[in-house]
Amino acid sequence: MPAEIEFCSFLVPYLLPVLIACVVVFVMLDLLFARLGVYRYAWHPGLFRVALFAAMFSGVSLLVRG
Image (cartoon, rainbow, N blue to C red):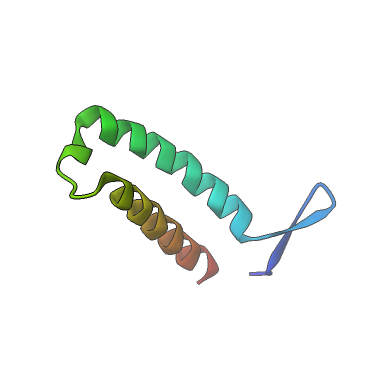
């Protein structure tokens, strides 16, 4: 896979679309978890949110790059 993707005659890193997709999915998961009350069971909700996004983004980026 190339390191850059051409988008409207601009070269963007291949991780940019992955990042945008992960942000969209993370926002939906965050709203769902907040509505279900999952964050009440987390020791530190902010740390849980950051770890969830980091795990999601790194996992998807490794799958795409692989």
